[in-house]
Image (cartoon, rainbow, N blue to C red; front, side, top):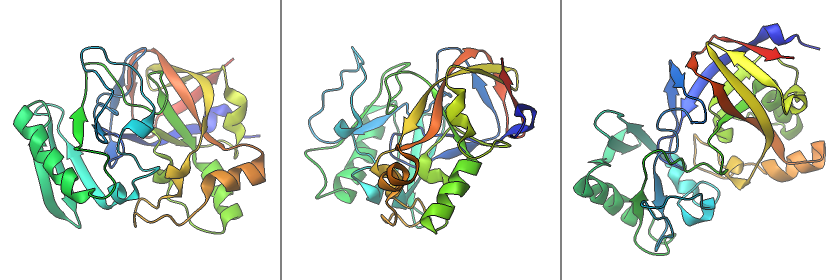
Length: 257
């Protein structure tokens, strides 16, 4: 078995707007009980919504535009600026929308684009929603999502096709573990960089993983393949931050006893 001392973060990502493109990070400052800054900080409601910014609560992802049902989102490239709160949306290298999400006008500019772009898939006018400190994750807990690159490669062997790891929309991708070894880590703690994490659950995969993030096409059947081959639909693990600190690609990950 691979020793835990060989574990290493190879890349870090956040997803400022639920369902839209990832942003690669050179550094992430982690705070106990929180996500990576701005990760899933915004979502786009699909029609008349249930989200109340004054009383934010977890809602299932079916309330929002998301890749499980709206694969056209993968054809867009987005960039979000923390300081100005400006979201820039591009398609095929050309800017198609831009607006400051902390202003009514800015949100309207972006919403107008999605009203046209997602026409036919909307239940009503799209609405960009957020609330201070709220994360629109697929799970209720504020957490980080970790994916073992060896497990992705093992699944590639089963499917017979190259799988972009970004299909799995993780925050941290790591190397140095055997394929599926992470399944044994539930309940254990990890020290990486100057931060500490506690692993609490596996990640059950949905049909969003069938969408190729490069082509925006559904070209795989990931959940049924996982279930048929491995006995469940899990790939990846969830962890909460229990100790503050900074992490970077290249940082070692040490499993604590």
